[in-house]
Every structure is written in structure tokens, then in C-alpha cells.
Length: 207
Ligand SMILES: Nc1ncnc2c1ncn2[C@@H]1O[C@H](COP(=O)(O)OP(=O)(O)OP(=O)(O)O)[C@@H](O)[C@H]1O
Ligand SMILES: Nc1nc2c(c(=O)[nH]1)N[C@H]1C(S)=C(S)[C@@H](COP(=O)(O)O)O[C@H]1N2
Image 1 (cartoon, rainbow, N blue to C red):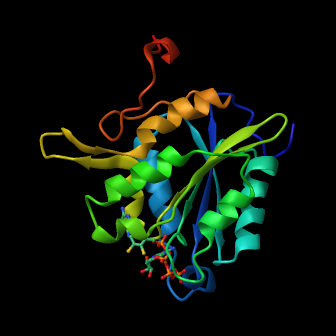
Image 2: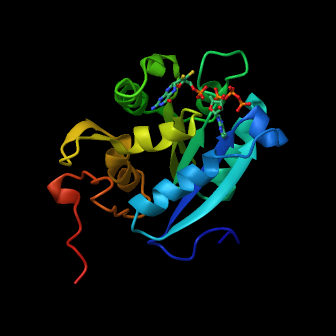
């Protein structure tokens, strides 16, 4: 077993990648990784091990970080934030597609739908989600926009004051996706995001 691999089968390893020229140079403090970590700690009740990277908007560097997080660090899920827009240096989607074995287009489509509830510029995000599969491991990689507030917006979606759902966040579909690619069974805090699984895939609650 690789030294950095989890010894607990019910622990999820999550890679967090903040892609920002200015945060990586110290022009401003990175808010991407803290925002991702804070949201996941609130939403996921399964134990999590985080592996984090802060990198500049450089496609080969982003691809190399993603490969390392999946193949060496054995993350089951990798979330990136930043670099999904149309500016010349926004290359996160291309760097993600380069390391993919298969694309998961529904995530990008749903995130843009959700984000339109918050900002009309949602359509400017070219964010993608992909699988990276090796012989004995697989991970889901999802791009999120760089605005720190976009993290909870896209993962959690939008609810009315009475708790009813306006737009379902994409994280609802992540646990079952991780099941299907052979990762650990992820449980969530329903008050933040209710994981959806078909009945046949649900585990009975722990006694
Ligand atoms: N890691 C981050 N930490 C804090 N704020 C960020 C971060 N990334 C982006 N932002 C904010 O969100 C805005 C849009 O993000 P985007 O990924 O397009 O960054 P950018 O304008 O290309 O600049 P940079 O790559 O230098 O962060 C930024 O202009 C900045 O205000
Ligand atoms: N939920 C959400 N999605 C969002 C935004 C946002 O504030 N919230 N910003 C949009 C903007 S202004 C841009 S330019 C694109 C790309 O952002 P990025 O380059 O920071 O990834 O994401 C869009 N999607």
C-alpha cells in the first residue's frame, strides 16, 4: 500500500485544487481551498482525508497535479476551483480533459443551470467533470468556478426559506457516482445536501 493511501476503507480521500495566478503568488490569500474544505466538512459525515494544492493557471501544472492526486495520492474525488472562464489564462477545463478517461457532461450542465439562479454570467464557465480511471483505482474530478461563493452555490444548490429546493446542487449525485466507480460509501448531512441513491444502492442506517 502506498504510504499516502488511506488505511480506512470508509474514509474518503478528497483532493482540493485551487487554480489562481494571484493566490499562488501571494497577491491575495487563497480562499478557494478553505471554502471547499469548510463546505465539505459541513456536508459530508463520512470521515475525510484532504490533500490540497494551490497552483497557477498553467495547463501542464494543473494536469500534473490532477494525475498525482488520483494516481499517487489515491483520491476518490478531486474538486478544482478557478480558471474555468473565457480569459486566455483560464485553462482548467482543458487541463482536466487531458487527464480524463471519460467525460461526465451532466455535472457541467447542471452547475451552469444552478449558477444562473445566482449570476447571469454563469454561462461563461466552461467547467467540466471527468473520470480518471487506472487499473486499480478511479476518481471523479469536478471543476468549480473561481469565485469562492460559487463553491457552495454549485455544490449545494439553492433552497427557499422553507427548505424547498429551487435548484438541486450537484453534490447530491456525487456519493452514488463514487459508489459506481468503486470508492467508499459517502454519507451526507441531509440539512446541507441530501445524497440521492436508488433504493437498491442504499445502505441501512448504522444501528
Ligand atoms: N483562490 C482564490 N482566492 C480568493 N479569491 C479568488 C480565488 N480565485 C478567484 N478568486 C476571485 O474570483 C474572481 C474570478 O476568479 P478567476 O478564476 O476568473 O480568477 P482570475 O481573475 O483569473 O484571477 P486569478 O487566477 O489571479 O485568481 C477573481 O478575480 C477573484 O476575485
Ligand atoms: N455559482 C456561480 N457560478 C459562476 C459565478 C459565480 O459567482 N457563482 N461566476 C461566473 C463568472 S463571472 C465567470 S467568468 C465564470 C468563470 O469563472 P472562473 O474563471 O473563476 O472559473 O464562472 C461563472 N460561474
